[in-house]
Amino acid sequence: MTLETNDLYKLANTTMPFGKYKDVRLIDLPEPYVVWFYDQGLPEGQLGKLLGLLYEIKVNGLEHLVDPLKV
Image 1 (tube, rainbow, N blue to C red):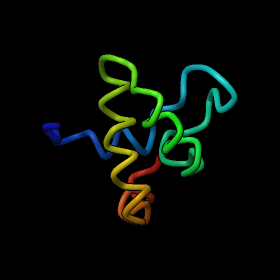
Image 2: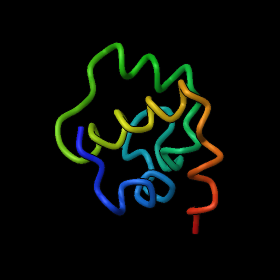
Image 3: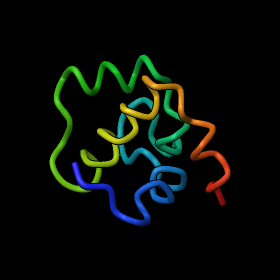
Image 4: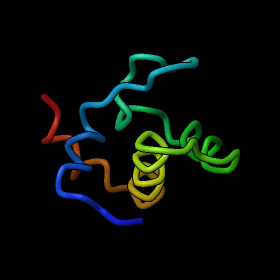
């Protein structure tokens, strides 16, 4: 996965477009849900890329690095 300059900003401000957590910021998704989603297989495209990054951030306890980027 290649990290782009604004991926962390997108992670802090993009909302989940569907499902139980629709309209919840990606960074605010519960870790068990992110892990489940990762295990099921991430979607293609930008959302999948951001969810993959989110998985790495959540399982390593690094959410505090993204929180300041919320607008």
